[in-house]
Amino acid sequence: MSTGTDDRDFWDAEAERFDDEPDHGLRDPRVRDAWAIRLRSWLPDTPSDVLDLGCGTGSLALLAAESGHRVTAVDSSTKMAARAREKLTGTGARVLVGDAARPPVGADRFDVVLVRHVLWMLPDPAAVLRHWAALLRPGGRLVLVEGRWGAISPVGITAAALADLAAPLGGRLLVEQLGHDAALWGREVDDERYAAVLTPPAPARHREIVDVHLLLLRDDEILLARRSGTGYADGLLHAPSGHLEDGEDVRSGMIREAREEIGIELSPDELSVALVMQHRAPNGSARIGWFFTARHGSGGEPVNREPDKCSELGWYRLDALPDDMVAYCRAGIDAYRDGESFLLHLHRDGDPIAYDPAGPGRAVPLSRSAVPGSGT
Ligand SMILES: C[S@@+](CC[C@H](N)C(=O)[O-])C[C@H]1O[C@@H](n2cnc3c(N)ncnc32)[C@H](O)[C@@H]1O
Image (tube, rainbow, N blue to C red):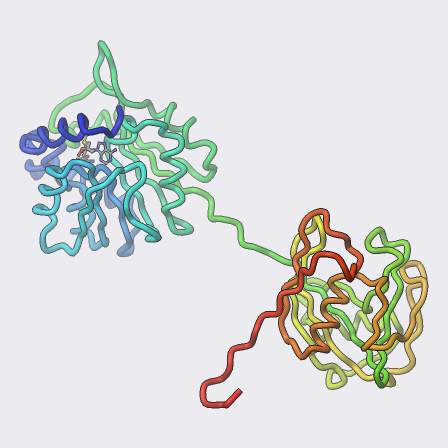
């Protein structure tokens, strides 16, 4: 079924007598209680944001609001929406006219998307489910009450078909059969009716490796190490560096790496933070890089402690750095010299790892905000 004017005309015409059906109007207290009990079991225990799509005259929306939830209800029929608005007066619920497939809720996100007897009518229900799942906050759920009605030319969607549609979303799907519970319908029914509660998996958190880099300074020179035999940036000069081990803080990690790579034993107060940068290698994933400075002499004379990974150590003028360097390391040192504290350096796939004076400039300094009243 489309959502064209014809359908809206149909539902506008239905609005007046829609509540005459026991499970629509919930006028019989036994039917109403049966739905109230089921709905409470499908919704969260604590007051939550519930989006009721294709809300009709708002009977389920009202039960949700009476349970303490904050309700937004949407229907494409202005007459249905008007009835829902009337029914929900005083509950704080808002009723919007719009398409259930793309509800007009902007950037709002919900704990529950509740839909009764609507999904089966919408074109491309798989895409609709994807969109509804995207309207959920992490940990949110879809509560779908559907069925397949009629014997000769049945309409609707079976629980098995709904499970297939929902499978690509992943997460947990609980199906509760409702056909046997005559109290819900105000009479005995023999077709398939059910509720499906789908909790999509929470989106994965973004994670990044943290690495540390030592800018060891001797007057106006810096110590660089030439990488070798590592499979990454071999032949290029780089600051002594490495990534954090599980549970390590950045300063301890820097002290460990300085010991392991160049044999110096730094104390915490000999290290200062030069710069923090988010960097990404071509075709790689992003990392957070902390750049520390220390003065030559702190912790002893540097020696190449990892000859299998480093072919030589050398001192280079800070104001005339060599070109044969790892590009992001070069960008970090340049930014430090320019007085920057925070930098993005995100290579695009296909960029060279090596610094190229004529290559793509990927360094984006991030400004520090001034402290109000400090004059800085
Ligand atoms: C069978 S009634 C269900 C009403 C309500 N969910 C209930 O269970 O009482 C279907 C409702 O969906 C609405 N509807 C149909 N297609 C829609 C669409 N594309 N967008 C929004 N509402 C729609 C109709 O106007 C009607 O109110």
